Image 1: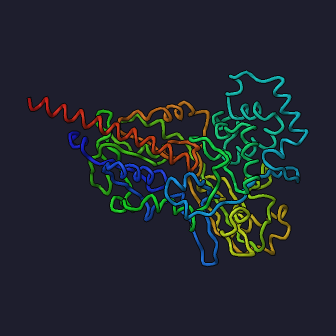
Image 2: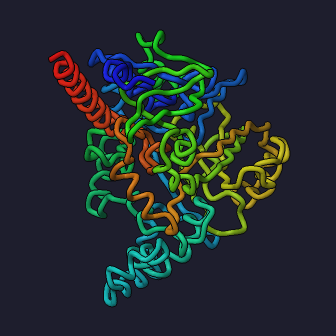
Image 3: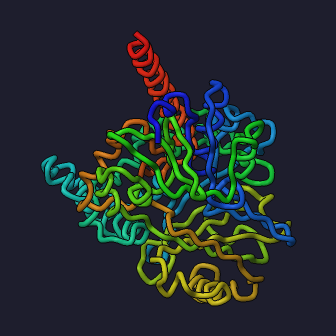
Length: 459
């Protein structure tokens, strides 16, 4: 492939989910040519919404976006405000509001204070996730709540996980108090812990797009449909002399000026041809998840929108009754409880058929909803092999290097899967735009070098 063509070629974007479409939307506004390759038959990826003929709406888990993101994309007028959102923890048969209900427990408070009196060294705290949570919350709360939930969510012992998983919980107690109080006063679900790229404030609250979160992707794709190639998985990213020069799709090579990839980092390592520099990324792991959406008669069957289940006798670690916050997601007089189950691809849970999974959940949830068998009206199951990045200590150095630089000129990972990060929807949007400014700068610099080389050749 001729590198000279590379300097004026389009940017290739791999993946048509929120990150890939944000990248495409931004480049389009800057009049930068691009081609977006989507392996599936439609855009949106894990941001897809599903609707059935009975009037239920399902997502891959409970997706929330906020009014700030909706306004930025241009769908603010097509969103409904979420008036309430709450989380609780069920432990020893008692439900505690999160986080302040737990903070009212004398047992947990005493344990946290004991850790403050005799704090560990910084080195000890950052040895692994178990130490981080015990140091931050006290032994009792960490051992009974935080660590069991972390292990169920990630599928790995907390002693084998990096302390960086604690970075998801960046809000201080005063900031959390302020946002919770603002939510009560405004009677809106003010966001707390969902945005880190731009600070949260009392004027940023959760909303839900009409028809589902997929509307966000549809809006981003408006006007660029001709640049999107569906059912077009990229086979190879071609690198020469440490620089991206093209992609191969459907056995045809396309010169490119840069590649923006939402592919999971471990898959990206296998796509690159011409260098082994990304080989270490192949060891990075993602947690597969199964979401069992139970259709039930009645409403407000859980104590809160989200109920966390740290006790090991539940197969699930989280229950979400979305209609408590967003009643329009289920028909009147009915509800939807989403059961999150961590698993491994091909194991018993992953391979179980939908009806069997529904029955398993119903049996276990009788402890929480005693008459759930009478209320049950079937389920819909969604599966994904790449729900969450797993921050194992064994490859923490690789993860940190990926966050700093990919090591190949013109290759830019974006999105939660591409960056191997725990970034949520709004953070992905702003981070992707920042990356696109880097792409444009790189492309402009490449063009300048090309023009200088051409001028020297002519002389």
